[in-house]
Length: 279
Ligand SMILES: C[S@@+](CC[C@H](N)C(=O)[O-])C[C@H]1O[C@@H](n2cnc3c(N)ncnc32)[C@H](O)[C@@H]1O
Image 1 (cartoon, rainbow, N blue to C red):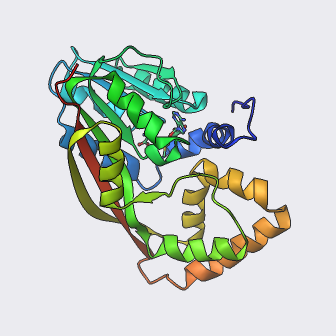
Image 2 (image 1 turned 180 degrees about the vertical axis):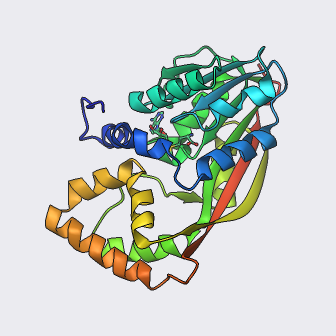
């Protein structure tokens, strides 16, 4: 695990969090990220031989599936702020014998020339960026004229009913979110954000899916795999408080348990947007 130089600012803390959880996150316990990556690419529909830049690629959920669309002639680059995530992506690409490039970049400052890619993808990462507008401006900049952006995000009520119950519990412990953005988007918010940052022909696709957790501990483990979560706990609660929170969390989630387990419906909002022919 990599130690980040300045883990006290928000961006440094977020990065530190993802550096720490990279191995666990990559297991994708619920298979959500793999499944949603496939769906995002189906919607973006990259053409054979095209170029794709995957921003906040993590351990490569989207990047690693792109070659199904681009074929061997395509160019795929994944970028992320967390080096350990990129190493996971590289090792998966090697296992799959796929020739992809992964490089460390802050989404808000992409070290790439203007108009370089046919498609830009960004899956479940936009809300992690401290300045979402700046990151979208950068995505717009590196897209070619006529290129397409594809985003996947959590929609409102995103892990229902678990998310709102745990939010109330976290409030009781005075926990403040580490991220400076909400975790989920309403369609009009996403539409406004994309239009403000230069995109056109915005198309929003809302979908729902469900997952079953066997135990409250599994839900907790899922939370702990999301980089900023363990950092938030560590920065704001003593170890006694953390263990009280965990026990209360278990008791609360136990109330939702049926014979089949604990059901959670998750809401997704995919966005497709274009860069008009203006270069
Ligand atoms: C929830 S993961 C999503 C990873 C991947 N796209 C997926 O679908 O599994 C969020 C990712 O955003 C990355 N991230 C956070 N802040 C970033 C920034 N400023 N620039 C680039 N990547 C960032 C994290 O390191 C993490 O890998």
